Length: 126
Image (spheres, rainbow, N blue to C red):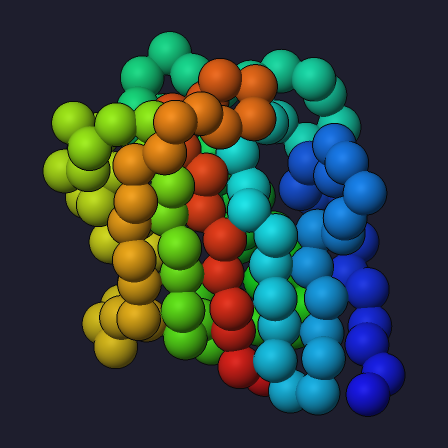
């Protein structure tokens, strides 16, 4: 199966040996995004709401570069530094979907890159 690598300047560049997203067949797999501002090394982390907002904007940019939007998303995974962030992250995340929400799991983990509080990955159908 052929795969297409998705790269956009409107989302943070990968900080390791991976790509922002990969299209395989009619599926889009987006790597976990954190609250890095594109084309900078600046992290948005003054509040969990602002951090989540930046993560969702990064995901939105990758979806757009792939010819998709949040309506195409079928599965997400949310990683949190602690479940005390769940309600706020859930509220911000929910604003990006018009209904028909994707399948999802949310897990608290020991640590995340750059000591962020939230990382989100997505799978979309094209």
